[in-house]
Length: 207
Image (cartoon, rainbow, N blue to C red; front, side, top):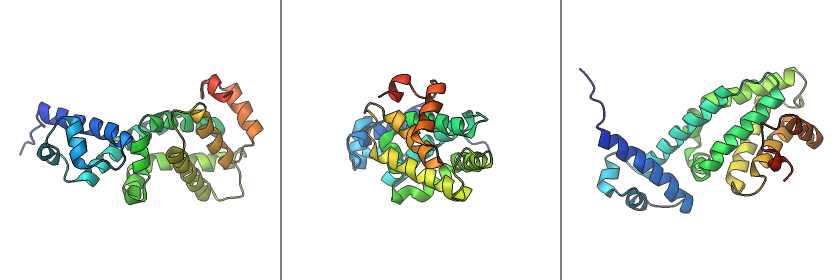
């Protein structure tokens, strides 16, 4: 039996709903399904033709965002664990800042299990970086590698949910915070970011 491809208008409606949900939740994280439907220019009935309920819509937002996060993790190939972590933090922050409300929803306790599953490739990358950094002596070794990786994740979660993405120096703060958790001093972070200005905008570093 051949599975029919979704109609073009159905695909466009679904994409429009997701875009509207991102924008609406940015203005009001508690926005109802009715508000999101109106924002998308669709009826509530049409929206329910794509998503069973509000949670299903949010889970889809998480999944789509996770695909982009996981792709970023795959794109970081620096041999130096310090540079790799800094670059990963900077690139993820740019993406998280762009969809900060959706990212914060993804990190909410109500969706933490779904988020963990969706971000499994990214989490494996962070775990591998923690081990590699400890093995070459660039990361702290007072914690086991899995614990350090988890700590990096938890701090990243806090940064995403608590930092104003539009504020000056936000990306710089995000990168420095994770480097600090990994065991680098502020001077070491300074030297690293100065030596690699492609990681964070130089104006951000001096902000």
